[in-house]
Image 1 (spheres, rainbow, N blue to C red):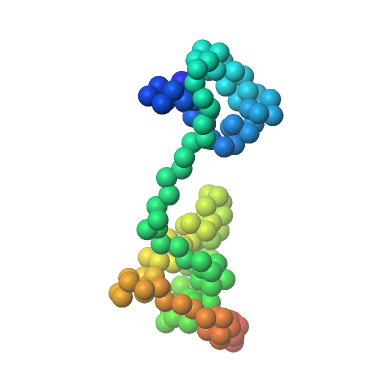
Image 2 (image 1 turned 30 degrees about the vertical axis):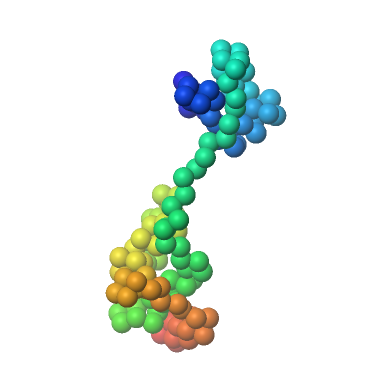
Length: 141
């Protein structure tokens, strides 16, 4: 077995990611070579794409951008201190290559009400509220 493709002996299949199968179809190494070796060892096996399990209950925060977070922070008490903390976090997160996930984690830890944990509903920040927050942040700066 290898990391690119795996055997499923129960279903008589060779399982690979969509990307790995496409690369093998184009004759790109090592995918092509690996798949040829696996098929020659088990010629009655079929090649199938790996099915990714999705979590239908996963909460999504469409529209939650770094600018939206900044605008929301600007409307909160002690916003200057929090804004400086947030920008410092972004520098560290960017260096780690995980800017958005770390920023979102910090944001929800500091502002759990934005997720709507209290009433299980997401609080919607309108464009008007973001604009007011930006104007307030510019005045404070």
